[in-house]
Length: 223
Image (cartoon, rainbow, N blue to C red; front, top):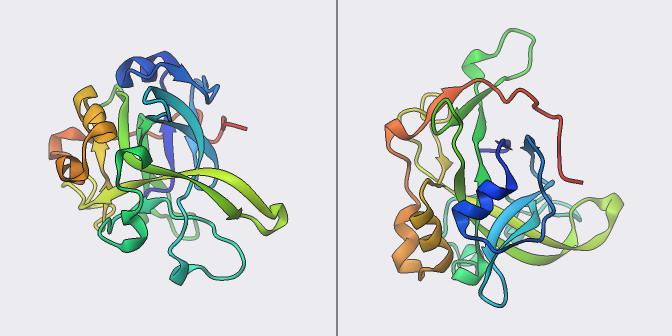
């Protein structure tokens, strides 16, 4: 399950790739590490039909049957889109794309005795080109952390699918559903579900490579 990714690109590159007209996130970090429960940029259709960069918290509402205690930490990765819980967010108004340049999966085989499990990092190629996760977003009122109490949020998560041959040796259960072209981004943000459901698929095996961890891991986050 992908619970860490990095964005090493520019706001202008995201605007140009997605044809977004406005940036409501105020994001322009040279390198941003994104963890569950933190704010990060997404691109979505706004209420007037234009495209915008917004800032949202990573972790969609958890299905009620899986909530333990009096708070909801959220669901970062969404696989079973046929579930009634997720079907409410399949329409274009609830879809988003999530910019990234590399993502991590825990690599138990590389763990040293007594040490922590390290991450393996994946990118489109060694240059770490801008790509996007196919995601969903929603407004939500609830408790993420007990100490914060009930708050209003905008939340997001992204789809996963079967892993390709690059990811499977490290994480055999799943990989994110990734969009690599402006045409795929346009389709995901505007198409009806029957026209976009095929995008929940692994990238071809030559579509990802293993890369070194981002140089500034942990250095920058959105406030």
